[in-house]
Image 1: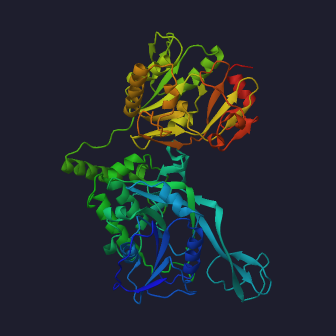
Image 2: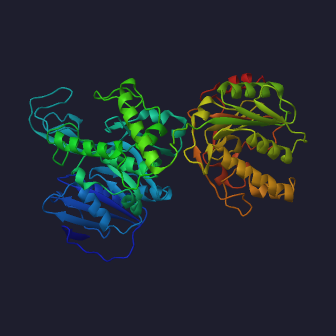
Image 3: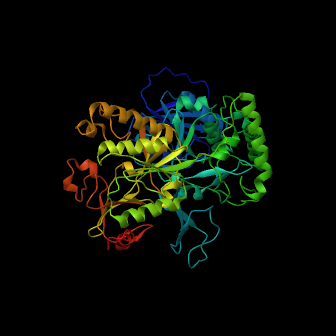
Length: 591
């Protein structure tokens, strides 16, 4: 363990850590527990840097080679402490953490595995149950709070002597994934965002964050300007870091593959914030953030605040604490002001305003050899979505949008010709592939791809057997569930078609290429574009009948590698959003 005093420290060390966990701490009684938990949970080359800001900790932090402590006899503030910790770090990544938290096992390697250079990442958040109070006389216990003055057991006694019993566990039913800020730029939780289609994947965009924990590359922290010490010691840090990330051109995401648990001390008394709090201090930080972000004064800014609000629209959750949201009726005045400032920003930069809503469309392709009742049910479901349809078929198909009759025999050449033709005949920004023997749930189309250079797969699907209604699911990307930027997919399938036209559509090369773009690294792949998964609120259904172009596997032993059927589940009862399995068979007219 290293002890460094004040700002006089000097370091000359090699880059031996990948991640630095930085903990600003003032009068924190649980910091030693937090540090001990990190050391036990980390799985990579991770160090801990604790800034003791104005006081030593009781109990003390145990000596460890991966822990560095900076001590200040006089407090410099939470923002200055965090900046100091980042300056001391020589790791590629940094994670800011409050001094009263639990981290998931392997949190460090999980976060480092999914982080781009311009991302700010937060793990899933759970409330922390730190301790209970216990009456020394009647032995009754109750949930954490300021020091009690009387017994609060189910049958209170007259005792005035109580003791704390440590629990130190996450409250698994109190989870938060998504956050926002209101028209005053005040932090708010946003559970409703988690119900949108685009929020279903393991990595999902969030508008803002709780300042207790965030992760990023150290270089990105300084790129966005670090923490504004002029704003004061505390307050607005979640809004500050998240908004800077978005407006400087980055991406703010929640990583649902890992989590942290945070102790909330909002009950006052001796169970409150360790840093001195005042309405004036918080108001000062909020006013400073409003001056920077309302008026787009952030250094290096490439997007105005109006862009961020439009990206997450609608933001209409009703007034909280008397403050409306951006798309509530009462928030119109503030929204108009921000939009006008956005127009000024674009004009000054000489760029076109990013106000255009992304348009969505469907391509539908079929070999026209499907059982009529299945075809009818699937077409009806696709038509009910209400999006523009570009279809390509081996027989004319009136009623399926802009239809092109492909005069080829059933086979791979016809298959890829249909996809390419349908893509060319669609003029939307976003495209969803729809095969003729899939039932697509409406929630599938709620997802909006957040990036133009990624293929997205809806991994919420079930495969149902028409002979008996048996259904299975396992973890894999499937082509009929792909969506993404239309130009990206058009370019991919044009390249694929050109390659196969030259080599031949019937050889083994077509299988070496792989059918799902972005899912493998074989030399025969078409391009190097990455793929990501998401999960809609309800699943799509892959109907397996007697005339599928691809083979069906109904047991794990049919896979050459068990890695390819990870998460295997079998279901003979009900498919969420669709009803009983037998009802699905009735819907498609096979029983």
